[in-house]
Amino acid sequence: MLAREGHLCFTVPVIHGRMTRNRAGLCPSYHGTPGSAKGDFLVHTEFGADVWTFLHRAGFDSVTINHVAFPAATALTAKVSLPLSGAEENSSRIKANDTREVSSHLNGEGPKLTADPTYDQDGLRSVHNHEFVNEPRFQAAYARGCQAADEDYSWHWRVHTGLWAASATFKLPGDFIEFGVNRGFLSSAIMQSLKWNSTGRRFYLLDTFSGIDERYVSEGDITVGVLERNKADIARGFYTFDVDVVRRNFAEWPNALVIQGAVPETLSLVDTDQIAFAHIDMNCAPPEIAAAEFIWPILTPGAIVLLDDYAYRGYRSQKIAMDEFAASKGVSILSLPTGQGLIIKPPSCKAMVAKPSRRSFFKKWW
Ligand SMILES: C[S@@+](CC[C@H](N)C(=O)[O-])C[C@H]1O[C@@H](n2cnc3c(N)ncnc32)[C@H](O)[C@@H]1O
Image (cartoon, rainbow, N blue to C red; front, side, top):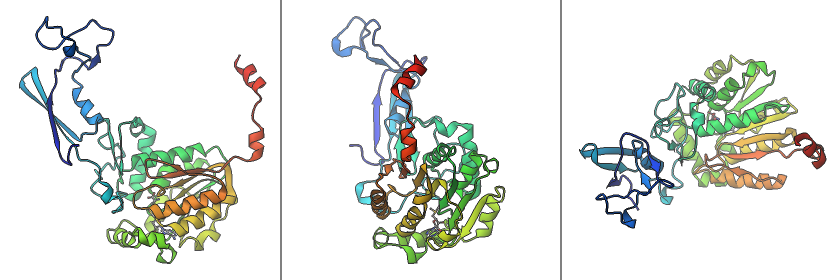
């Protein structure tokens, strides 16, 4: 196992004038002296100009290409910063404005994502497709979130999930709601993306606008360090206390209704009987459970509840509480690699009966 900050050095034959190709199906070619044709020297892959990308795909952070006698004798050096060990599991959350991971993308463009095929930020490293970061619609929404927060939290995949969930529930009747708004990154991105003023819906936005209310934290929250984190988040200016700035941010959307105060006390101010999308992000369990209990009866069947902290490192007290809540409602929570959790309000029995028959399905297609 390579140590953190460890280096890998190796050589490989590279054909610089073209891209890597697999030789399967081509006539056999052999490394070494022409005519030596030994089975062990059979070429399976001819590496090309994109040779360096294989190292990034394997998880290396930086790659250097060295030549002794160009174009021959190519040597590659790669370095990796390994993920945090289990011992660091419950240390502080890599979230929001953690400057270790922030690289100032206030224009909303993705982080080191175009040349580097690895997504690596916000506690998530993945080589899977994340082209969404380059989509103009995503970029515009993300940029609006950055504008609201006056900062890039480098959490593209979480925002992508939020935008997807919001648009997936957009066809359902009902208002939107966010518990834990802070400066309004995600909610602004959603409203920008869905052209909120043309929807006629309300977006309820609840927050103390003074950080976590310590009256509403559980023993479990205290055990995982919620109070210390709250103090740290207030001290570094992450939690806003300036509701006027927040209101100004949302001023372009008259149907965005900012409600200041602690959940559960402010729940009675939410004046709606139908909710299609909810984002719960208060970083402590009791108000989140109160919010979930409050909305459950008025969620439109098919509505999505997105939990920002459900699986996030260091927030296990919220997972335990939410699992208990979900079990009491007969649903389970989809745990996402972003650290989020996702609940879908089950469709009503009526909707389930309206399924087309096998006969009408076949008639339609054949
Ligand atoms: C992580 S921030 C929310 C970030 C926000 N969702 C975004 O997209 O930028 C958590 C917020 O929850 C708020 N909060 C914590 N406990 C609360 C409570 N009991 N009632 C209302 N808001 C609360 C905090 O003030 C803080 O602004």
